[in-house]
Length: 535
Image 1 (cartoon, rainbow, N blue to C red):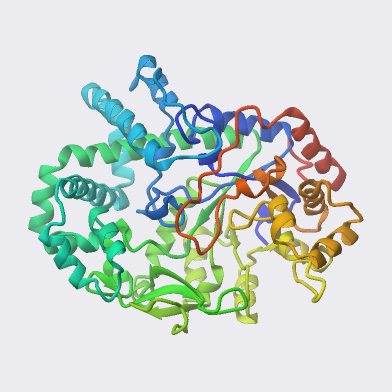
Image 2: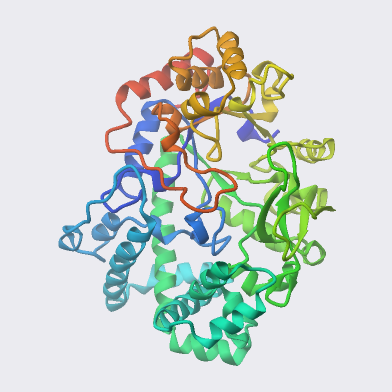
């Protein structure tokens, strides 16, 4: 077991978009630093986040335009004022945002307007040394991402002035097998790369050179945003680490079809031209008669094997440069993954195909070192082969207390059945309802009764009852979502799997993280011997 998984520790799960901020959504400014201060007062040494990439369809951090880039919407305008790229007066007329919910449709144009003002001032000042160094150090992914984003932005602006253009009709004919009419419009007006003119979609060198010459300033703007994101995130991470707080990041196993990754290296994916030949999902089960159809392109694993899994090594290395530990989502897909033919409307007609297995993780060990700081998301129906892959590389798995209290069966999530050093225990994750929401709306009466008897509680303070249980278990890490710390109900849920839109909006309000909450978590530390080495 890697050294970072040998000492009992605890922490909180909250994504930066959820922090209080005057600018419509949480960012890397004052609210983030105040959270870190509160976490330290609470004696917590772990902070878990969701993927930090630029969000695409549905504002989901699990559908990103890049596996390497950062989300520019997390850049703090307040920090830009400190740097001199914005003035205080430019932040005076802030809209009256909803403090509990992110309205992405309104926030995105507002923040991007501020960022373009900041970039204009930055470009005029030309402070090139640090910026040039950043661009050079990250050129392997930054050049492709900047080109991809600049072209996409240009085509979106161009298409907004068109009304039902002939090109849309042609694209609709081409994609009729795969997309509904509404999806065709989303892909076309959102300038998904599969809708680009063929020379751009296929990266024809002459066409790419011509358009990037035309869009040189936009390319530079994209690079500026990435420079700012990583500068602000790096400063925040250093601040957290100085307070003995380690950050747990997140890697989605699959990448989005409409991403710089697929556009730049189509040979690494199962594509038929500019569209997947098969897509990711999971098979029908007790929860869904038709399975789940995610739609992400599948990896062409023979191509990855041929290059020694270099892309995966670069990807994990890049994420670990920004966090201390990383959770990999849908770990079971490395052993076997569900492949659904493109054009299917459900996941029923898929089949299991063999994943890269040990070969990939041996490559990661060779590249990153013997002790991989990786948490395997191994939720759901997991086979012995998947468990063996995880344990062969000493990777801890996950257990969720909300799944534990089915009285009809011996749930593997019950605390007394947990293998301590191999487990990260949660009350719930970003995909679960809040503990209060689950208990009040989703749990059966039999589950509620079993939980109350198991804990010998009344159920009137169920969120904190499960937090106490989480801390008390033998699991090496105990992590609780911020919604449970705040004892919030179902309206504070972050995401619901299977529903594509309307999620990832939760924010907590300024002052919500009061001192008594910090004291309660700190008391559980002392009681259950967690974070005992924290300074």
